[in-house]
Length: 459
Ligand code: P70
Image (cartoon, rainbow, N blue to C red; front, side, top):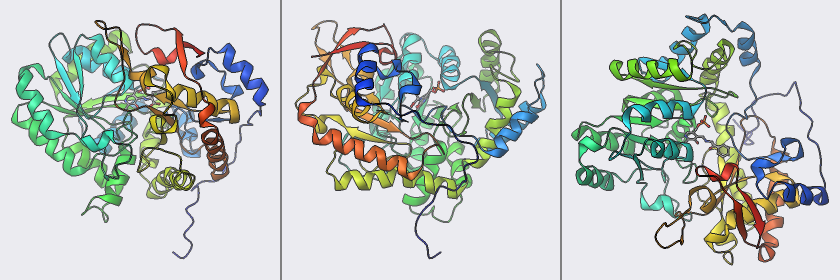
């Protein structure tokens, strides 16, 4: 092809108006929300990059599927279509629908967790960690060192450090490691991919100790596309083949369909182990619903089945990954520090380098996220000391996570290139004024997952 511009591979036939707000209005809204962007009404946001979860625009075929949804309580036609598609994509025989990813996590870790158990991953995301800790087990993050260096250009910064994984297994004993997880792509570490070779090597390590491997698969298609583009030997494979190979090294997966299944709600737990699946279904019946709907409507199952088909289209993935790459190029030109290379679903600003005058215990990422909202009505999400920091019970001192990030996550098929140009301008504007940013203090926080409901004041 001669034309090089990568376009949005869709036309728009239904639109949702964006309400414009003024800086003055937003200043008041921020104060009212206690500087917590989760507490701002979406109507008061111009460009919403809080999350790529459940925010996708569905296709005509997905909406048509919604109309065809079979709402029978048991054995709905839509369940069989969903099950067939999940089996086709993942190869796992046992398919258990859940209302979203964390429900699948809660069921899995409820069966496998418990005191003394350790569950390793490249990096657990917040709900995964919270669900493991809720079962009194320990969540261990073992990403390669490059994964913690925002400037490193390693092509697969989501890779598991397999040597440390083996050390951990030997130290705590294989009997205390009920499952090993791999998050593809690695969300907390910048949406960075995991290579096929690393999945294979992780598999070899856990195999030696009889430990099953589960993928946290919510961004599996984006990971597959990175493998195609970056890993030797895969450029001629289709993303469908690559995804299938990724899953072939695992024993199961948890999935938030709200990401790479292109739907607004849904998830699943899938595996090969029949006995574990039987136990999972029994928990499902108590907490989510009958095994052929698991907390979802038949129409949701139809939309997931169709979304799993569409997400692997290469034109879609090329456009999707190009979005982050494009933003990366523009931010690089402006000298704005961010996690490189850009990940699949988001740009992550490096808050430590962006606002070095604000120490971690004063939440530099939160300060930047608030400024993006104030100056441009752009909503982003802190992934740093607010989300993953903690207070040492002995010393009372703040223990900061390895990275202080601000994530601008891209809803799938929702915003156009000019929306992203607007966001780039807002980020540059905040960066120009970075020295005037002030740290923050938490005035209220709940016990777990504090970022969702905490309140702050400016220092
Ligand atoms: C996100 C959302 C959800 C998620 C995930 C991985 C790797 C499991 C889940 C849980 C959560 C979020 C964060 C900030 C703002 C809003 C929402 N990630 N594993 O945006 O899935 O949400 O379906 O229960 O990333 O990254 P679910």
